[in-house]
Length: 200
Image (cartoon, rainbow, N blue to C red):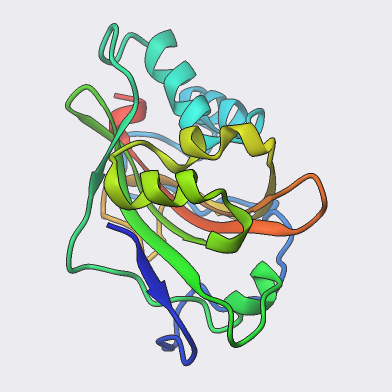
């Protein structure tokens, strides 16, 4: 279910806190993991992700290409009672004022029974159509599929391999990004933790 927030948003010291970061050039080491920092499968996964505006589309292509669950369509599963704290500068990131309503979704994206991503999404309902907002509230369709007709682009903000305290322990790759509408207005801020199920 979609939640709406008005200021003050919850704030705490967290790795979310940043304005507009550039994509990190270095990756954290994969200590105690079966994959090393230059694992070609993870590199290919990240390249696939960066080539799509929609993480949903990227995961669908990855799921199909690796036959993770043949014939499966990417779907979401809502995560309850474990919401992330919003970045302190979220309203700056999204280009909205203190009175603007924000939506929030915390979901897992699945290919068949395989959880590929644990994702947090803060978005601007006023920049979506009424039907899109209805679907976000009432359906289990991924955000990227619901909003695809808006032709948004993806602006990477940061990326790392493992080690992010706000991700599940099995996360192999962590990404923060903005989704930008063709008119330049931000549509959403996403924080995505991609799991080991993508590369096993």
